Amino acid sequence: MDPIDNSELSSLLADLAEPVAGETVTAEPARAPRSLTQMMRKIPVTLTLEVGAARVSLQDVMNIEQDSVVELDTLAGEPLVIKVNGTPIGRAEVVVSGENYGLKVVELTDLDLGTLGA
Image 1 (cartoon, rainbow, N blue to C red):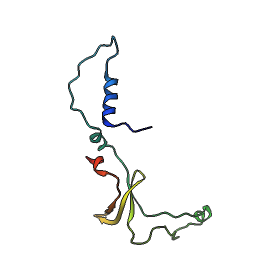
Image 2: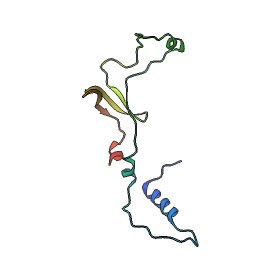
Image 3: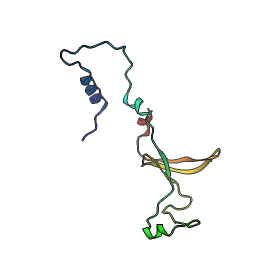
Image 4: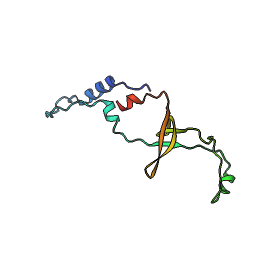
């Protein structure tokens, strides 16, 4: 299915708002139209920083205990992957921000983040 652009979405919503024959319509106060990107800004997403992964056998997992070390596929000192809802959007380094860990962005992919925040 092809994505619907803003003009098609506006047209569909206008069609849904048209009264049915014989239906009484009450006037509502005029509201300023909200663009789709303005509404999208308020949608919560999960931002994660992926340290790495390891492919292991179930037997290896069963043998993990306190003080076990599992080697990951990320080299030490290499920037880590930033993900939004599981989709990679760039790379970052871990930093300390107050009493919490944070991330310092070192690279963003070609994902057009400007349109999401506009």
